[in-house]
Length: 190
Image (cartoon, rainbow, N blue to C red):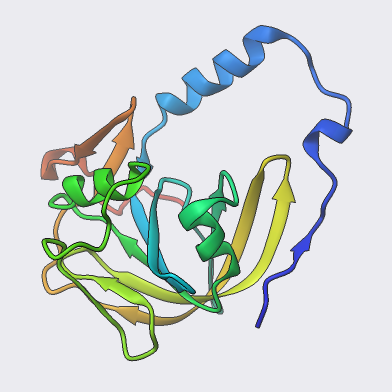
């Protein structure tokens, strides 16, 4: 299965607000918005590839669908964009070094010191993360220089141990302490 780009109209093809402060204010707003950290891995012609992402979101539980964005189609991102399947590893509080490695251009991502193996289905699997979601791409929509990928989850690999999540906030990886996590009561999913 090959992922095809749809919705190819570029954001730059539409009228835009040219106010210079919009970009810096937008960047500032999202820099101060915490996001979960995931590491997405796939296998390409040259072997395993992976990236760190703070854009993974749940779209639907039935069927299980997720989405994420790729900021370019170079290097590891191009491998993921063209993969027949990939694994989205939800990072936990022990994965800061792992997330940093997969976020650093040119870093050795699948070295001998990295705890990983290939799944029977061929994707690289990182040991010691939170839940891992094996998925197949549904769509890839171009949005200016980014691509938004939706994917159906075909397998969920439970972690050996459930730990606190790793989040990204203000350009720093952070752990949530138990007293910072509110109870599920009071959360609305309307």
